Image 1 (spheres, rainbow, N blue to C red):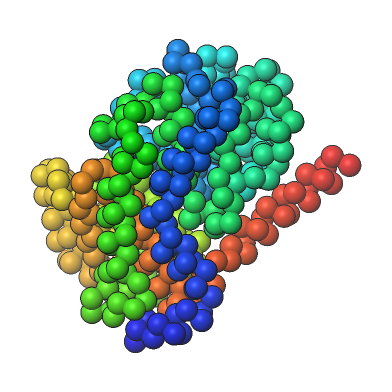
Image 2 (tube, one colour):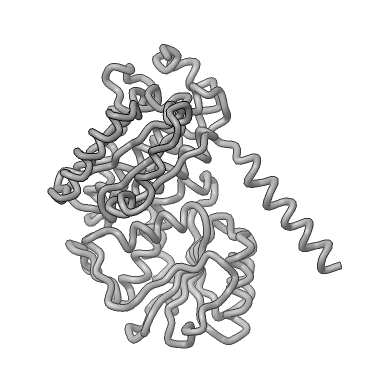
Amino acid sequence: MKILDNEKYIYKHNASKLIDILLNFPSQFKNAEQIFRETRLKDARLELKSNYKNAIVLGIGNPSTVAFKLLLSADINQLKIPVSFSSTSEIPSWVDKNTLIVALSHSGNTIEVLESVDKLTSLGYQIIAITGGGRLKEKAQENKNIILIEYHKDLLPRMAIGYAYVLMVEVLSETGLLRVEGFSRNMPFGLYWNDVENELSNFTKELTPEVPINSNIAKKIAINLFEKIPVIYGSSKITGTVAYRFKTQFCTVAKTLAHFNVLPDVNHDEITGWEVIPELRKDFIVLFITEDNIDMKIKKTIDLMHGIFLERNIKYLEIQLEATNSVVKAFKGFFLADWISLYLSILYDVDPNEITLIDKIKNRLTLLEKNNSS
């Protein structure tokens, strides 16, 4: 495990690209705000009406799913209308001209999103497209009913979460249908995102390859997770979103299977699964994601679960998140998941940037569609 203290090896191990992205990650928030402000100045259509009855976000995978989960789970976000998420090309029957429609795709080539956009534009509905480019950008340039908000595409999709979240919040706030505690449309540029940027910048200093194992929580946790299947449990709405991010990062970056769930749901069915035979229990490790202001009933439940796992020789760890508000707390959790996954990829000797199986499935689906249409 000492390899994690060999920073030269880490930087040579296909990790430098992801490390650069992580080091620059705290700047995404103000960059995204700047993009929205500049786009709004250039495109009067972004002066959105405030009488929408509901909203839908079209997206799938990273970063759209995580961004939407955070929108709903952060207690500082107060939505005045129902907002739903659609990850298929099926359009809900309730969507109409009074629905705020946001299409979110990093690549701009997400099949499900593109198919949904085609169906909705054929009905004459207006769509706000948040993307890094691709076919979604092209469609926006071809169709006056699609408003384009474009951000930088030269990121791994899963690492564009800052852009995706901020731009989605900016759109909803522009309508007046989302009130964010401490946020005002009249605030000086960048002020609201200072806390996120500052806390992540400070947190970065504790997690980089230059920080040795004994002082680096990300390296320590990666070592504990090595050659185990992580089961991540959130203890609240916000830590449940963080747990989901942990799962996706372990899968995509470290190329290891992972599972997530949220308390108290776990104790109504899943907990009985831990009666699995001892030979299988040893392959798992449980990672509890908690927070400084945890509900005392949930804390007592976790303490009881600790005892159950000790009785069954199931290894577990607990990570407590602390921050000035729930959004900052979530992004600190996301950030920690990113660094842990990076170090796990080093231990497993895999490329943290490649998503070979995802690309293979996408390519084969595209080929099947071409064959079916010919």
